[in-house]
Image (tube, rainbow, N blue to C red; front, side, top):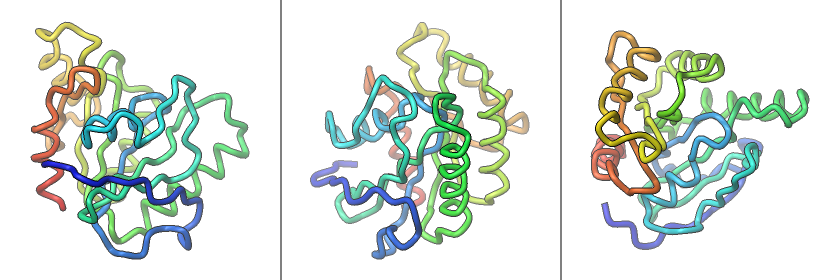
Length: 193
């Protein structure tokens, strides 16, 4: 897909702030610092539309990126970031839950995990949560550039077995650094928009 005019539209913390134009929404979930913002920038071929940070826990709102008036990439706050106070974690958790369970425009959830690590207990909780939402989703094994290219397929398959033993959820490796696997991800996204 060629993206011509992507733009950041709004940061929302409550439903009244969500966009009203009914475009399909591709939602990114994953732990803090897993690379959700970098994923957006890579997919739309921009360096800084989605703000990235080496400091985990930067995204505290739901960020909506309008992609050529065709769909939104929706960047949810990361989970598992310990420096956020318990109260902040609860607030963020509540508005993520409210969004995921009430938003009719969600077309696909992209669940990002770090290819270098076994899924954490938080990853497994989020996986179960996404399954319970009943929404279509794929698993993205991110940061594939950080391991040997010869190991990517095996490690991706392993991650799938750990999270999704029955193997019915598409699991794709991804690398913002190398910009490989983008076509595969676009093919999946286009099925849902």
